[in-house]
Length: 295
Image (tube, rainbow, N blue to C red):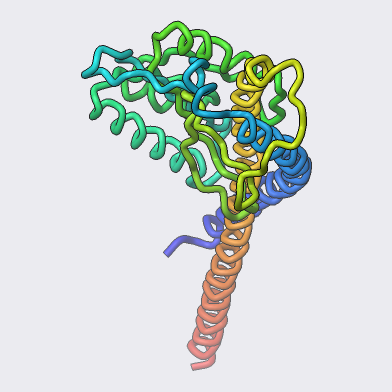
C-alpha cells in the first residue's frame, strides 16, 4: 500500500488535473454556443439553395452540366481517380470524435479502392492528416489553418481545385467526410457526395410546379448556383465538425472532471484510513510501553 506522503502527492496531482479538465470543459461550453449558432445560421440558406436547384434541374439540363453528369466507371474508360475530403479537428482530448471520423474515411477509401479507383485524400485538420501520414499514406493536400471558426472563403479554397479537376475529367467523384451535428452529445460521422452533384429534391412531398418566369435562363442560373451549392456543402461540413468537436470535448472533459472527483474521494478515504491506523498503532505502542514500565 502506498505511504501517506505518496497518497498526498497523488491527491494533489489529481486535484491539479481536475482544475485543468474543468477549465477546458468551461471553455468548450462557451465555444459550443457560438459554434451551434453558426450551424443553425447555415442550415436555412442551405435548405433554400437545395430547393431552388431541385426545382430547376431537369433530365435535359443534367446532361449539359459536367457537375451533374456522372462520369463513366474505370472499366468503361472513365477517370480512375476519386477524391475524399476528411474534416477533423486540430486538437485532441475530444473522446472518440476524431477516431470515428477517421474510421468513416477509411471505410469510404476502402470502398472506392475496391471499385478500382485510386483515391486522393485531402485532409482538413491536424488529427486526420497526422493519422494517415503515420500509416504512410500520401496526402493530396492538407489544411491545418482553418481551426474552429471556418468561413465560406475556406470552403471555396478547399473545393475550387476539386471542381476544376472534376470538370476536366480527372476525377470520378468527390466525397466529404465530416461530423453531422445533431446535438452536443450526438455528432456521428457522415459521408456526403459532393461531385457529381446528386440532384436534390425539394423538401415538400410533391415537386412544386413552376408558376414563375426564370430569367435569364435555367442554364445561366444553374451555372452559378451549382458551384455555390458545392461550396455551401463544404462550409456546412466545416461548421458542423467544429461544433461537434466542442460538444465532444465538453463531454469528454466533464467525464474526466467527474472521474477525477471520484478518484480524489477514494484516495482521501484511503489516506484517512491509513493515517487512522498509524495513529492507533502509535497509541497502542505508547500504552504498551507505559504498561511495561509499570510492571
